[in-house]
Length: 302
Image (cartoon, rainbow, N blue to C red; front, side):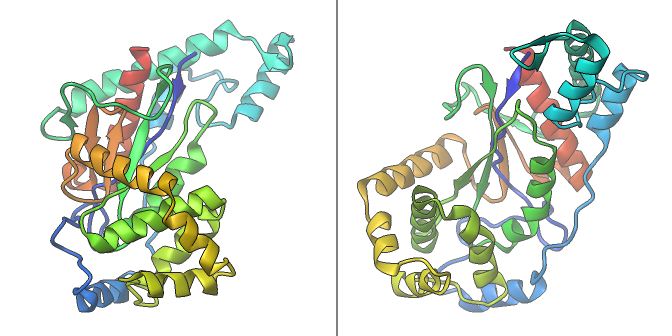
């Protein structure tokens, strides 16, 4: 059964995420006032209405089969299918019926997407496809984001909605955009936090420090003061930020930004091949449906 890797590259918008985006000239170290104005409008990310297209396609493919709903967690599907079939191998359920239903559901999503979405209008195609960080048996979905961008901050609930639906077949990767020196500093902090195992603790706090507390953190001293306020050793964090490992990851991020032709954030990249965003999709529901469609297309081709 195919496996997904989800890497979200996010191009989205303003009052309603996805309808506007941050481009390289929008936010700079000298643009503190603009950041503060945006922050006043985005103190709490709004809840976003995510489409039920994928669920509807699944139900259409298997209206009476409740064992293999793709929106269920793997443990739920395994336990239910085990009761129905009594077949297990090393604790894993083996069910040809489940696989057949999953294939039918994927085909339904693709058929619906083929009718609704068009390359060059709803998503862009990179030719040739660019490299990804995932194994070849996975479909990769990447989010390109920037901490300075208020629209990326507002996009977080949408990302969380995708992650809540994630199964074993999916993984999620964030890729920082490096549009200016402040973005580069924040990218260093992003990779340092990952390396030290404190990224989950810092990610939302980092966004809120900029957009709620109105502290752009435009230089290393202000950034490290924030890090210390989160109970993390300032000197150790600075040391990791300056490491060869982090420098290599930032350089790699810059290369991928170029390869993926990222001109604004947030943006979504599917398998190094398709690029979409709220700007292209024109609504939250359509963006989710487009992402599901593109992932299904790539999964079917594995």
